[in-house]
Image 1 (cartoon, each protein chain N blue to C red):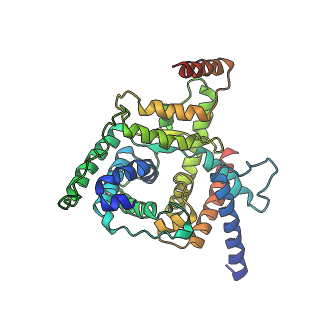
Image 2 (spheres, chains in turn yellow, green):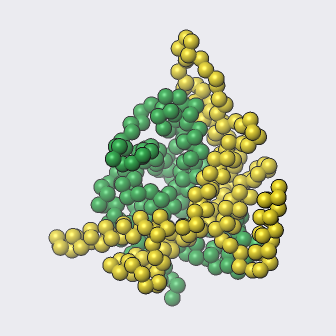
Length: 172
Length: 180
């Protein structure tokens, strides 16, 4: 490749990089709407849009998450330095059930999923690996709700069901 | 991050925050849930055991809360995945039928189209050479910046930009060619 050719490639790559920053932040125009991205390679824009929308996120099974959490807690306990005399404090359980009855793991998961619910960003599938344990709030349920909120139902019946559910939640 | 380095019991917050990202990365690389779980487990156990060695490289100019912890963690993950791959000898070829687990029961037709598009995108990425595929996954699934990907893959930012640009051009041609 010539010196000029390499320069041109680096400039194109820089333009692509800026476009991806916008796309992944939810600000980039979609292909074919006639706005922006004029300098961008057509194939690059097409692929970026498809991958940004279609590549799914994966999540391990709840059972795996909790098992590994316990292993890490055991390891952390063995790594902790002994407290100096007079420096003993309250020990907060690692990954335990909180006093409010909300499992911190579930709370964190909801926080994590909230990131998928950003209206500026295109929704995409979230897949869960392995078996799901039965729990008061199942991971699949949480994932489905998050996914569903990104994909408003198209049918009048579906919209009606959602409206009733929303009203029930408010009353509760 | 600092809290976890001083007191390993604080590592739980980091674990919960990055678990899905590491697992996704491993799953795309290994194409098997069990292998991905093994690699994820090794990654976090190794990170916790070595957390005292982590050096924060973020500068104040990088912004509030900026940290290079994720880059450090993903470098560990990359090694764990390489070890796991030597064990299982598999390529990321898993189908996307598992998407049904979060499918919308009210939009069966739309889900079918979406799954098909997702499969096509996934397969097109899977047909890329390893370094291109890895860069795309880190960019689009883990949503890392170019600087972070450069840190994980041990290359310059310029090299990563060119790698991703070429990979996207190739994936775009692939997707268009197969949809005709």
